[in-house]
Image (cartoon, rainbow, N blue to C red; front, side):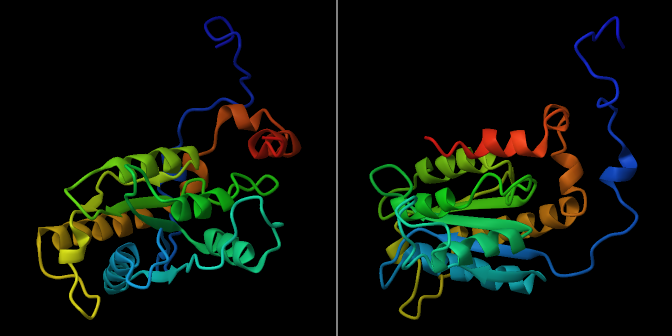
Length: 237
């Protein structure tokens, strides 16, 4: 190795270990899924879609929690010990997977959606609250079908080092897709949501016991925890 890879530290470099990817001891508790949505309107279609997704997830055997963004301050406008910030961060730590659902506004996710993600730190000391966890993304729009918000959410998921599943949902003309009681009507849009939640549960079950190994990186093994924390938090920006 020293001849062909002179820049590699052999003490920290190793081939993938199948036994660590497929551990003999598997978790038996229900997959823990946190759901975030990006609107605080009384009849919020992103919230209604989130509630529909949570029902499906529970039917698929998952434990779900939905964060209510009302009262969450703008990022950096309050200290980290604000009650809503503490609640959100504790839920992020608890979760093994997440669902992010945003309306599309002016061709992008909403500020409410982005604020929630911005309050979740990349690192708490040497711990990354979202790294290696699964993620499903969805959006609602008032007009024709669009994918701007889900595409942006995918970028954020990658930045947060999450395992974003391939499938996604975009519900067009959302005001037509829910009844007066707030339940989603039968439609191809509904069936896509079912598909996405099925896939999320499967990916979570597949990866949760080896998530730390999946995201174990050579470059970070060479860093101390203190140096890593300083680099990823970047409090000066």
